[in-house]
Image (cartoon, rainbow, N blue to C red; front, side):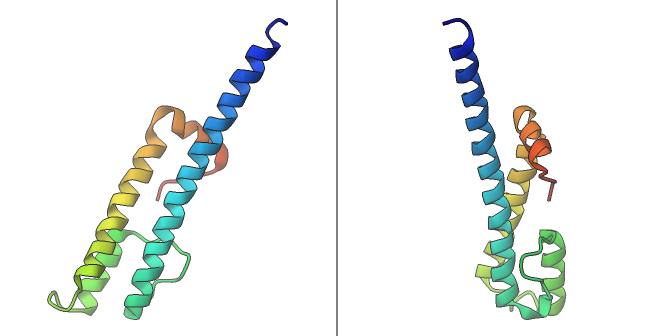
Length: 111
């Protein structure tokens, strides 16, 4: 038999790892876009473009400028909190050793 089954098994494991990590990163980016879209629909005065990724800190500052502190709903603050958490998780995933190879090959950039 030789080394052919060993090479096929290792190659299959690497391919499966690549596809799993790529899927995870894509889901996190889609979740970020979805949260920003929901926030943009709830607050049209922010001027968020659908499908575009914006910095959560910038969104929070513009939300505070457009509304007083009492008028900001808890749901909006919760969405901004989820944006920050998702951004942190995504960026920390890209920085870790085996995942940054997948990010570089697949073309993922930090948020």
